[in-house]
Length: 167
Image (cartoon, rainbow, N blue to C red; front, side, top):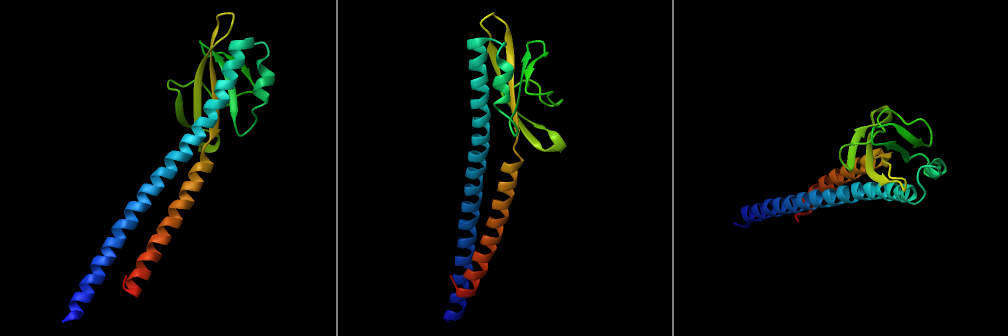
């Protein structure tokens, strides 16, 4: 009499556990992804804002030493309104150019996903420029891949353990 009820209860518990794990896994992963991407963008915005403030305060004359302060993995350059290079730590790659939007992801060196932040700057002499700052977000992608893998194995293990022990 109770044998069928016990089996049905175990199946319902297993389905409930699977549903809860799926919701937690998706929600946790999306929150982590959003946070890591926001942190990467905020770092680039901060560097671009510092360079912009330097341009607005001192103009373009003292800009090259300021750009050298932000070495790899952050790449930076300043372009005129017409797209001419004004200053850079060294010759910028072809993908390091002002973008239409403030934040853009492009294929950078070796095809890796690279985030570019472009901010406008006005020099005291009235010239306008675009401050372009970029860095690879491959590290963010690698962390997210590792977390995704851990979550898959942990979810599978939890389901197997729940099935074995009747939870």
